[in-house]
Image (cartoon, rainbow, N blue to C red):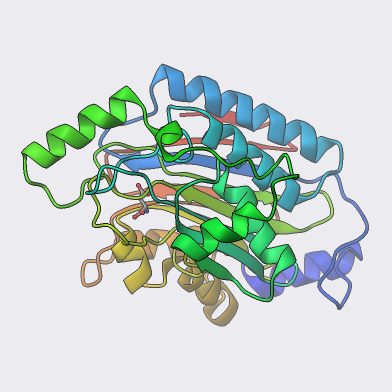
Length: 321
Ligand code: ASP
């Protein structure tokens, strides 16, 4: 559905004040989660279990009237705490044999954004990203400076600091050793980046993404996940988006923002905007995208063999792949 039509629906329902903040709750909500795009056709049993837990928690929060932003953060924390995803615990190794983590969170009400890149000690990068959004004048903090920023939250249970080895798992170590032996520069055969997009009952959209990046990536490399407009975007006027795949493709093509811009400027539907980007031969974008619009329409598309993903909404839809 195009933007003009949404506006009519929203104006008709009286739930979209001119300041962009929706206040009158409706009963409509929608949530989608990804656990990374890659070679496997769907997520394994271990991943599915955690996706179910994360989705159920998200649905409960939304039914209770909690905000899209809180829901995105809580859902991503669950995935970061699981060793089965390439985010938080279970993050891949970089070429130096350590972990550098990236995350972004974005609020569709006013495009407020917080992001961290190349961080090494915060157990839950998504929560540190949210602190950048709420507690600084900035959008993105990276590496040592971001690690230092985290240290001021010693009293805050949401910003726990851990030694870098906390993120290591046997599986990631094996993958890293194999990739190094094959002299591959960077590899993303292993799915696992996580993301979440939400429409809450107040009509507000939010998006978040968290990752360890590409296995054996060059020290200092940032992917699309900490770049608003590349791997993550949210705007109440259009959609909330989280991406997974070859980060460089998503940065070069400003993918998350392009989806929003196509909807705003060309009145494209969410679905066709994403399909067009993922099938573009001239400017290939390899990976997957989850997104939701203000009507609660969920789109989950990928051009890899598969994408670990889950979705639910207020009509009773509930699926895990
Ligand atoms: N997009 C992530 C990155 O390039 C990796 C992924 O989604 O698997 O850092």
